[in-house]
Image 1 (cartoon, helix red, strand yellow):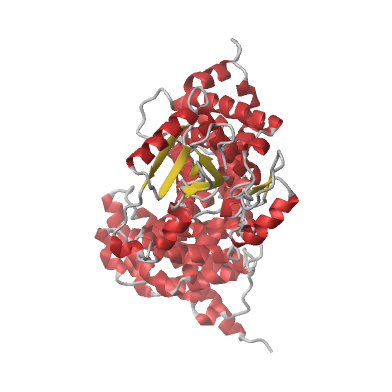
Image 2 (image 1 turned 30 degrees about the horizontal axis):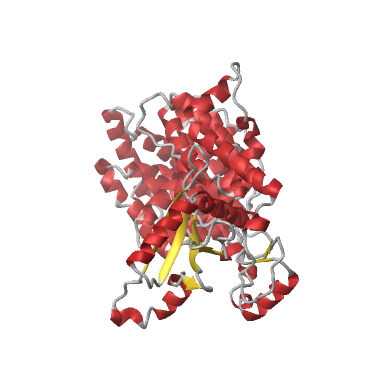
Length: 610
């Protein structure tokens, strides 16, 4: 038995047609009330819109009585089309009533935000109900347009709603994050969906960021879309960048680069993304996108887009506790893009900041993993440029410090690798034996100790090293941020600086002993956090003296003095040894690490390390 009689069916059909007519008229008249139409026309449309809303038929398509009749979720079904027509009309109403002159219309809401997002949830593609048929792109375009309107107009109202219904945030971010999978390249709405989806996400993020704990709420909902994985979120963003790069953007739409990279930079700067090792796809796609931007260098929005992209790069590279993002950026060609930016905009006065990645790179080339990555991509810079090699000539002129540091550090690194000089310079860490040590040492996997034999390693392990070994915490205890090769090279480079300045360092430390014959601390600090000088040298400091502590704090700080400050020790007659410290870059960190070596500055340089 049919659910409705023929008469009921005909009545419902007439109601449906009347509601559709009212919705179409409502949309037409609301568009006339936008600022780009004459005042007289707007006044006439205002009265018509008011009459339609008072009649109360237009949005009856969302009444339970209509929606409960065998709903179908094909994107061109009557059910879905009715929802889309209502949401399109609501979006226009929301846009128009955000203007002060139409405040009276805002008093009579056709739908509450909770109702709007209820219907959005039903047809949102991430929920798996919507079936892709004819009209699918219109559904996606309507939703992104609606989100852009809601997040730009009367944003405080939406923020208040979002706190109580955070799923609304998920719906907006879900459409933005995955729009490349929801709409095909080359379709009529592809550019508009990318633009309005990004506008909505960026406006949402910026609005909630002003609220206490608002940023955390947005990022939490975003991560939930990808099972809590930050890297998967960044891979989706890489797909967005590739999508935009393949769009045929006309001049009026190139602002998309500005808001896209602006959104990515905003997200990367959030607390939850701190210290992430970004996927290679993010660097690759971003650099490809920047190269597209450089094809239209005179457009302001494009310039800002590139600025935002490099703002993101700098944060990923510098605001971390590792060098992996820098290594990946180098491998993907970030220096080539830095060079291109300098060639295009270097001589132009612009109020934009593309970062100082060349300086960051220059000061990090002392880390072998960074150095090797740069060499793999730019080995040609080791040789002088020929007369016809205009690009290399330009690099040598504008980025001479980078080239000089690269050549200097590569020469030092290859010499250290070929001669394996560290095996004879670094002393055995086992100082508890009277037996003669073997000539060469090998490093413990933690990088904190060196041993000349298995026996020395076993003896030292039992007595001391087993208590402090960072084998399970990564080299030097940095959780994988440094390789053993990095640590060994930093060690041998530091010792070579001491050997080079032996006389000066001994004189400075000896003078300290004259002033204070019973010092409690002393160290030689090698500053590898800056680029080397033209002759491959590094800055250093040497100091010794008595630790000045308030007597009331002395007891509390005793343990600290023993483990950290007490670096001058009697190791036998006529032997006084100072700690050797190395200061280096590790993302945003400038750690000062004590090497497993003491410098006996009362001895001659031969055998001066103990």
